[in-house]
Length: 63
Image (tube, rainbow, N blue to C red; front, side, top):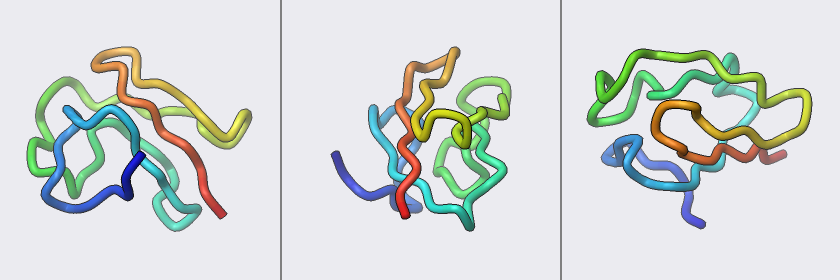
């Protein structure tokens, strides 16, 4: 489980996101492969964790 960095694409399986990153979309605009699949906005605030329906990347809200 690593911290998200700007050189990662949505091929990484787990991302930690911060409230400043909301609203959350996958792929995120700062990902190297920002156009890997259609952008989808994800509701991470309800449960604190959400998976992308396209690529399966798991996002966890920290802080």
